[in-house]
Image (cartoon, rainbow, N blue to C red; front, side):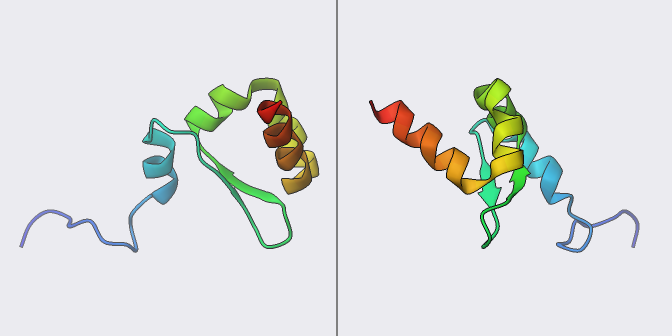
Length: 68
């Protein structure tokens, strides 16, 4: 049978997540940023390096700041 069938093994999940129109950021159980997509990078702009360096605490501060 010809052609490749997509499977979870060869699926590039980062490409899929990056193509989504909504901003996605994922933190691990220790609060470190482990994944972001193109939309999140556009939304966060200058704040993204802070999230990468400081993790979830910095994100929580940004969320709280947006509520006021």
